[in-house]
Image (cartoon, rainbow, N blue to C red; front, side, top):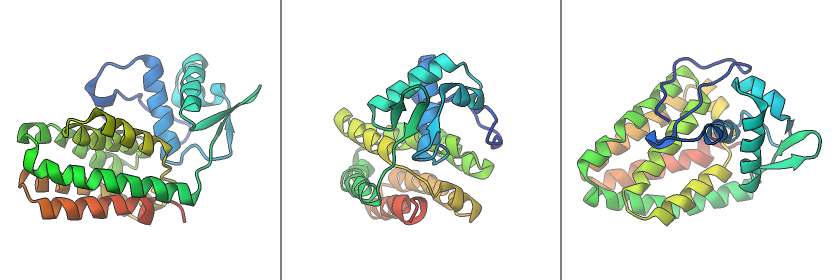
Amino acid sequence: MAAQRTSAPPAAAAPALPTLGGQKRSYRERVADALRAALIAGELLPGEVYSAPTLAARFGVSATPVREAMLDLAKEGLVDTVPNKGFRVTAVSEKQLDEYTHIRALVEIPTVVRLAGTADPVSLEALRPAAREIVQAAVAGDLIAYVEADTRFHLGLLALAGNTHLVEVVGDLRKRSRLYGLTALLEAGRLLSSAEEHLELLDALLARDEQAVHAVMTRHLGHVRGLWAAK
């Protein structure tokens, strides 16, 4: 997702399609990335049925890649197919959200803390552009861009530990999570402060300060349920 974001588009506007991790992605994958981010950000609501043509118009693409992308999301359990109508966004319970966050804390916090002593500074600095994109998205109020850059940053950071299965597990947990409170957080003026924690985390890692890394990661993951998720 190297594409730059500018201002937040209105609900009916077509957001730019992302390119995850600087890798070449197929058009279908890029459409799926954008739809997944919209779902995670809470812009596609649980229980609502969305047709491929409606989503295609919203994202400024044709209906065929949207339909194919939504079938991919159905395989991930994020939506259910509704014959002759479209796709219904699956709901996630409060208990499930708590469990996902708990698992992420158990996995991500110690992994990132260890990176303070092992990660190559050049590799850490390579994540700074993504951290800045998160801040820019928060300033612009672009929730889809926020989720895309946030996913790229965190999975890229975890990848520095050299455990691909760990990255896959956390990536799956992130897909299944819902950040329904992002809009409220944005309106309350607190999204920017959460976004800036990514830069704070990088600085702590580069300083080899394990205590500071632990504190930032604990605070940051706490936002997933304490600030972002609907109560």
